[in-house]
Picture: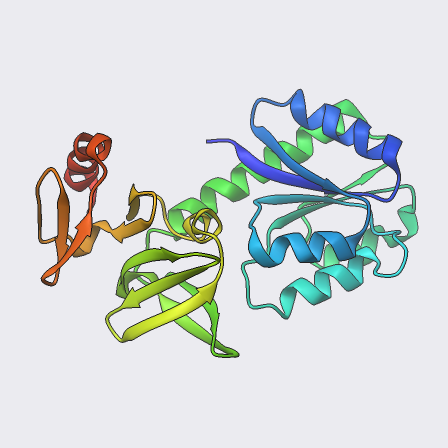
Length: 236
């Protein structure tokens, strides 16, 4: 699976250069670019990404202020690679736990080396997601809540919101289905319908039309039954 990434850089030519290197790396998938950290914050409120290429020298909201702001949201912090001409901030950047610091103009060899670090970290995070201690933070009714993924039964789409049904109640969250799906461990959850994601471990029975979880019938798309059968055989 490719690593989704975005680029934040006020300089158009530098963004083009970074995007070109991303597109030339088979492990990466470029999803969006931003000329300001403020625009990126708005994007990340409704979307997720695995990796951010960040120019810290940005007007209004600089890169370090941007990272501080993301930490306060309760969302999982993406991996970050700093790209800048300002090498004086290299030491400070590592205090933020960034994967790597790349001085501009970007060197091809150093860029690929940084991506190797990202791949190793990504593999480590994937294995961690399989544990029963995995959790996510959601914002519902103006409060941040910690939800263990093992307690989630299913998620359903509600227009601009999603409804999260858990062992301890249900919560309505401002989010897209795709964004919420990216927060979940892929081998434990499955999107069985355009409007439903289920916890595979909670499935009690199913047929060609429905999946049953605690006497609730959840619609199953016609082309998903075979994939669901295979997923249920693999889930541990």
